[in-house]
Length: 125
Image 1 (tube, helix red, strand yellow):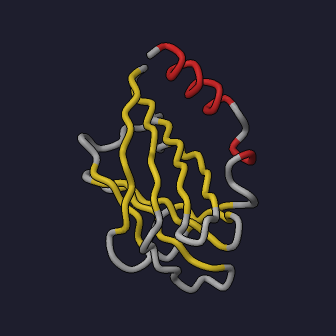
Image 2: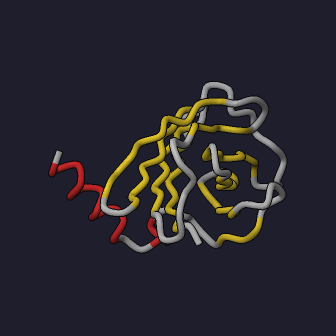
C-alpha cells in the first residue's frame, strides 16, 4: 500500500504542465477544458460523478465508446480510485462515493479507443 501512496505523491508533485499538454480554460459543459494529444478533455465533477468530455482539436465531440480510464483522488491523506467508462456520446464517467472538497487533488489517466493517452491533474476549488 505504501508504494502506491508514494507513487501518487510523486505524480501529484509534478507540475500540471506535465499532464496537460497546453493551456486550460472553461469548456462547454462548465468544466476545465484541457488540451491533450489530438484534441481536448473537459474535466467536470458533480457531487455524484467525475466526467471527461472528449473533443477533437476543432471542439467537435469524439465518441467515448471503447475508451477507458481511472481517476485517483487524494483527499484528506486518503486515496480513492474511480474507474471511468463510456457514459454515452463523448462522455467518460465514474461514480463518486462523496463530492470532491476544496483542495482535493485528482489525477486522471485515460486512453481513447484509438489509443491516445490522456493525462491530467485537477485540484478542486
